[in-house]
Image 1 (spheres, one colour):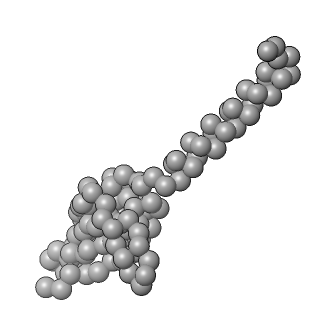
Image 2 (cartoon, helix red, strand yellow; image 1 turned 90 degrees about the vertical axis):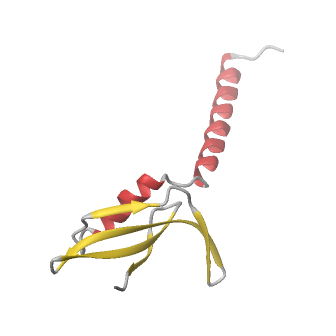
Image 3 (cartoon, one colour; image 1 turned 30 degrees about the horizontal axis):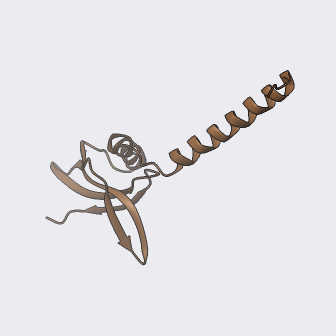
Length: 107
């Protein structure tokens, strides 16, 4: 079966569109790397807390709260305060990097 130049170009356009749509759908569900999430958390917190150190678990965990389930990364931050070190624990969304929780550890 022979296609005209316009028919071939149209077919190529349709294939490209479908391929692009498929790739974008695959990426929509992907998780950010733990390093990227840690950078986003530091950027969000540094405005209010002078961060001295930070760490993050490399493997995401599933967290269920109020009937909502999401993948999260957990980690911690340290900041100087009155001559000592203040420790914080955080939970961040693994898909967006949004900081969901930041708690100061009690001493």
